[in-house]
Image (cartoon, rainbow, N blue to C red):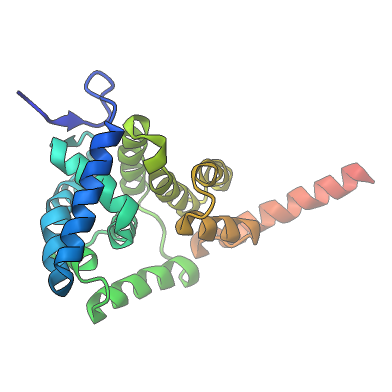
Length: 230
């Protein structure tokens, strides 16, 4: 029997069993708690192969991923309980990251190398207007996550939606980012990344590469509204 599940193909898309997903999550938490002195090993066992599949897809601009049953459930559990996995996948869509570095981000997120990679990426996003998105790479990630979101129980969807909202923000597609992020908050109004994105959007905080254009758009829109109301 073929248990592979292919994204971006509605004929093969199946609904994720929420009870089984909860069981996977419980098993992960039990294993994590039982091996607190060697968490990097647990993270590696649970998530490293997921990262290989993900990174190869992005590097090849291929959003037709064929996940195994376990990989799909591990991915969704990780995005819901291991925020380093979510953050690493977000960063990997924004810039090409060597596989070894990506796995280190997930298994050893507090190391100096991991912290420096995150710091440099965020510095580019907020400070360097010469750094622009690889639109094809980011859209590939958005398509993969969108396909997964369609078959994922709502209780596990806030993380997927917040990832999508962040990438849309990075692309400068602010109205879409607002819409998707509000959908995430409607599922879990305390989800940390969704709250961060909400605050950024509310305060007109944009990526450096499109900040000037977007702020001019907002200013022009405000002026037009003022003139209309007067």
